[in-house]
Image (cartoon, rainbow, N blue to C red):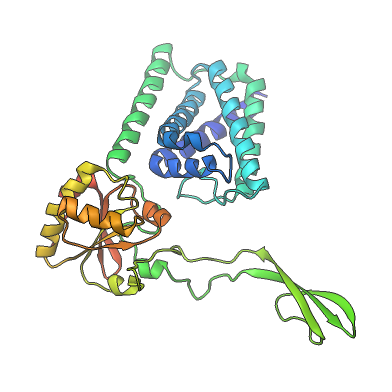
Length: 365
């Protein structure tokens, strides 16, 4: 039992620290996932949506700290009860999302590792089993440090988590796992490789032949002989590969300009998923940055999901000398975790990306 408890202690503690740190690296991204869970289509508690960021920070800091507590053996009774409560809640949440097919990605490991809802559920079931073992055998959880060492380590873990969370919110995630990170080419990420796995789909045909109704299931060829096709149902047996980037676009009122702008030698994209929610301080800093970029020969554009009236209002209010184009809000939130944020591209390759707090860090050649 002692050996089993120690193994579970390392696995559970390590996984909680790792999973929590990955989400703490991008608390804004985790808050977007929580907003998805809070929506009408999932848990139907939209009243929590305005507090999603605060809840996200609390959950991930608590997750990391609990993992540290378990590993060092600090306050085992409090730690075990907290771990049990958290994993029971997460197991319910992932089961609900998987069973009712409400959420495609649980967000357990942020953008670092995508798990399907069922994969996430079984991962939580495994954690639940190990935590129950730890709960039963908690007398074997011995502290690794002196009382002062335990208190100091616990306090430092809490302070470091808060500082790191604040730092990435005021700047950008330290580790970027998305398809818009510095060094990535957006055009390449919008394509599938030649050896990409295609989706496998079953087609169930309902048809008549000689006045008799029949059904046939195949991979798309259909019945060789028939009088009339009544209908066809499809079921995806195995998902195919998809491009890293699927919905990115740069659109005006009447045309798609995506490829045109991604071929530009020097392009600055000012990204604001919602001009209505954009930080005023950030918008006020854009004018000087955009003017400098244009003087250095850069093409400057804005990307937003806001309407035309708001675009005109913002341009007039902040005296901005560039046009805003339309892009999907969810995509813009993925591109840069700031509102506004700035992305610099050279022929579609991301060369710089900054939070509005760090506009002075941009280097224009």
